[in-house]
Image: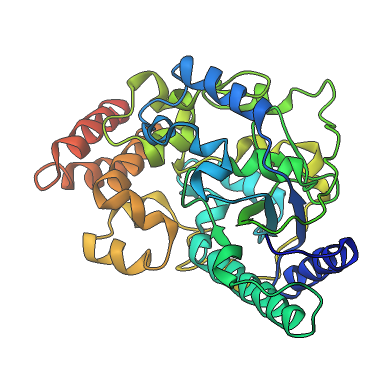
Length: 367
């Protein structure tokens, strides 16, 4: 093993946190890899079938809850968070109350966070490797090939229990809606991790502060939070509009309202988000006026327009057909309109069976 004295590890941990902030992360924490409690929570969630069609949650076995199985030799996880909110909660509430407006989850308005954060995490890895090389050169640690200290960055790209790791590293606590909450920053932030074999000192987990509040449970449009800390993905608007490949069950269509990609209701209502900070990251600013689009406008995009206007965005992953499917549902929930009927009818002849099904449902609602 690479031998470090305790002081050098403590100094390195402090330096890692400083570098993380220089790279645009609002907070960096370090934890060990014991996820026993989270593993049991995941097993119960899967046993209840709450994952729906998210088969990948089963696919990797215990790699998700045992970091050493995913990246052999992992002793510590460096967790980071990055704010992404670009506007006030009042604006979001107003948009949700405009039935002809297209509501898109705020995380997806700008550049795809996966790419941006992974690049930043790789820069952090490079800085750590450089520091280790200098340390070895100066005799502060015994010489050892760097491949034994491989560090692997992740941003929602592998079987990683990111929220459980972030919670253990002191970045916040997992709320009743299953998102991470920070007392000083709310929940409008992304998470990322670096798996490492470095035996860095670990941070203390923070205590939970949801108390008796159940606002997120009450506000959920489809009542997907079936119990505190238990989300049934099969009912969740984010799952239905992003992850679900096929038809949206009819029982949920009228409840989706004008949400065409994801849902933020449980974050909008959370009292801790009064402490949320607007992001300074320009890449997260809305592109193509996605924060103010109207349903009819985005429904009339051709496939070429959809691909062009969602380039570099997380939205593109659902593809054009599911994009139309989602908007058709929202149009069915909008006030009756001649223009809406005309737009829906225009998609009947050239659309897939998936889109046609939802267009016909919307037309019936518009009669």
